[in-house]
Image 1 (spheres, helix red, strand yellow):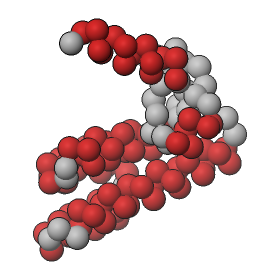
Image 2 (cartoon, one colour):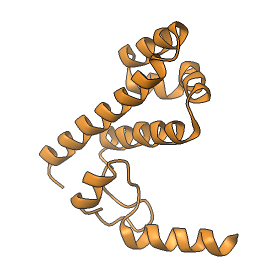
Image 3 (cartoon, rainbow, N blue to C red):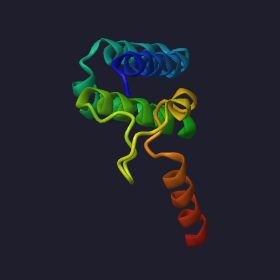
Image 4 (tube, helix red, strand yellow):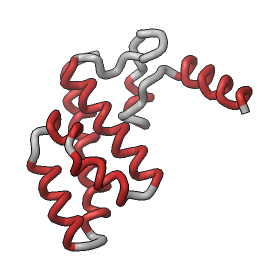
Length: 121
């Protein structure tokens, strides 16, 4: 996976994170202050900060899941692990990452995981 594509995905992830945080900021003045702190902080510090937990509590479930996935994807970019399936280790196709920039598995592994999850119910 080339660096230009990774940079593009990093920008997309940051854009989507900003959109989620902007939605939250629109809810109250207290949330605006928390969002400003998150946006101006170092990403590595923000991930472990108590502010992050407060934001996730205030977000809806879907936005909270998406924000966590985005932050995790940004962490993988900084660690040089972005775009590789966490299950099999193969490179996730760019077309999949363009649709779901925070994807952690290739399609075959994702389908297998979902099948196991359905069978466990």
